[in-house]
Length: 492
Image 1 (spheres, rainbow, N blue to C red):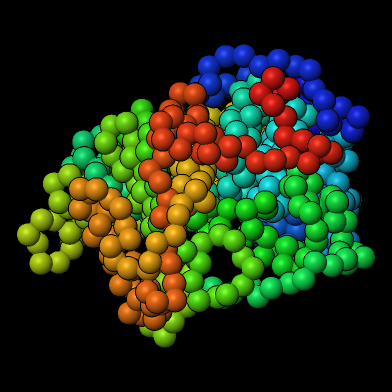
Image 2 (image 1 turned 45 degrees about the vertical axis):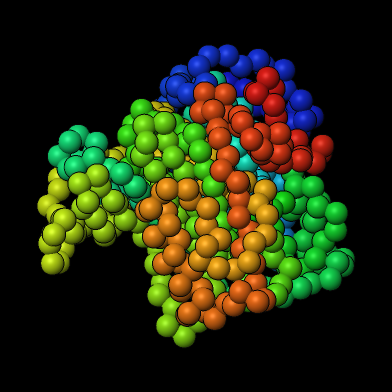
């Protein structure tokens, strides 16, 4: 499916574009970007980032109907060659994939239709924005943004260039999950009070690695790209970048992005961003060089009074209970649990009952084939998890993380939570604290919580107001390496 892109930045153009942006900040555009030959045309896609999720992307596109992996992109030569060999074997002569280190080389190809982004987080928005400018559709792994400001630029790039952008939050393709959220908003069920997400999966510490020389098979300058990093150490590559603020967002906006997105999806449709957010947690037991919390309770409140709670708990222990799901607390006291198929515990009931709901509206085909369908139709509205869904969900996590980062240390105790008269928050934080104290064995004498301030946020301007506004607004946009600068809104 060959499509002529409306704008194709060259490498020389990469650092400076001159197009001005206009229009509403929150309405997604659907301008057509180019002609489509037909629904059966082959879609040519590039996969950027070939470790971990990148392999899943390759497997997904290889199974999709009439899709060609035109480019495989990774700055690690050994990883690139390994994946090229795997793709060649699976393709069995149906197509040839070109391996490159730099995603810009793929975007220069006029016949490329789309790019699939599975790089570290600090690259997600930049590739998304540049791909949109080049007229390429984008499937971008979660989280779409590494900070609030670049997420907004990605939204405006989609609006201006009209490409399909689909977020890698697979539950958006689940008609069962969609059905619950439609029922919550239609009045079929009592009104939602709290949407609660859990990212509790066992992990271990990463130790400490001394600064050193990058391996010869890794293009370090290209790998770090937009991130401002003084020196290489071996904990950055290939996976532990997740636990450093320059490159990752911790588990809250790693695995947790899925459950955060589901929680925000349940909030009333007329709500965009929360107006208040706070977090409390710490990095306990591991004694390593990671920066992000391995334990966190966070909360956010929307203008309509609905709330999102979130729980990160990664420290392993003997009776660890893995929890990677969502709960829904309703105003009548009912609690809904499950995923795709649900149970409801009603007030006064001894046990939960099955909840029969109609399936919701999603583009069929799962997360991979739904994206291909949207690309063939050249229709951004078909994306399961579009650019606005991605932005709103990611910002929710960024605000919680930023509260944590601005926090101060207090003794590890149940009284550390500062929730005023919010009895629900106190109850759920105390559950987390009990697990950490009694299960993990964290003690007050040798550990501290980091208690973040309650940050106030203006959804319209996407900036902080009130106490801590100056400090919090600095965290809305990460420093950017000049050689890989995240564009300003005026540069889209």
